[in-house]
Image (cartoon, rainbow, N blue to C red; front, top):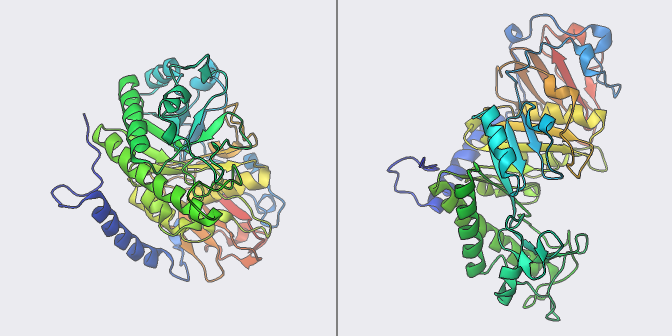
Length: 432
């Protein structure tokens, strides 16, 4: 069995000391990446591109087909991600091109079909870290289904009642938006071990490449107003929750890695906690389900806090997956999501855009077929906060701030850009 080593061989580091070393390394990388002015090489900016009248940067987003794309259909700047948990996949969906796929635990036959089509595709199984589920299909007549979206079934949890989280009145906590989802005591070591043992056994037996661990929660407030028994405030409850989730990720990540498997948590709240993306993605990668989502002022939430810099560092290192979803996306959001993903382009950066947050169908976007070629430089940020990056086949710029900002267009491309200002959340994509 292949071992996944996150520290250098014979380094003598424990997981936590290795992560501290990685954190120090991250700081030095960020210092380079955040140079206030990005200087573009004019040698990288030559070649044919979109007609001047077709390239817009003022909110009139062109159809992708108008950009004169060079598409070879196979070698892509950003790999295709499919978060296929909303419905059973069709044959057409399974036979489409994929880089990384997430499926439900009962889709074993579809896993085998994906691997038969492309042995290199990475297929993860969906598992919920935080809940057990009692709705029909997961739990019927006192018996859990054979394959579950959770690590622990409801009947199993009933045999260990201390695993059910309770509110200050002693009642079990059911998630308000999702009936039949029950919060578990993620801080309880016996629950952490039971979840880890069950998931590792299933993943290795069924041949999944690893786990997409959903609900790596940083706050309970998304699902309930309840406060945990033994705590006196929402803040205290949330701290208990975060500590437990971190411990679970450490325990499960080490066990999965020891068996040659990945752990990729859904850590979309990383922007709120410095170091969270770097820490929680340590055992295989991380997923951002709300990648490049605009806030009320138009700025993009992914760039808040230190999450973006941590993601840039991970992308440049190329040893952990970045699974990115631009959700509930119209044309503008899809273009900006693609531009942001291109800024993070690397050997393990995968992206999808969808207007359907239920994930019931294979995502489709014209930006999936855009080929920018190979990255010619690391992403850089201007003094006005605009991020940009040159590729052998094009160039992208993105304004993630909440204010209109000038964009420095590389020499050789300036005659093909009508407007050199980007409004909040806007992007510019030029294809040679």
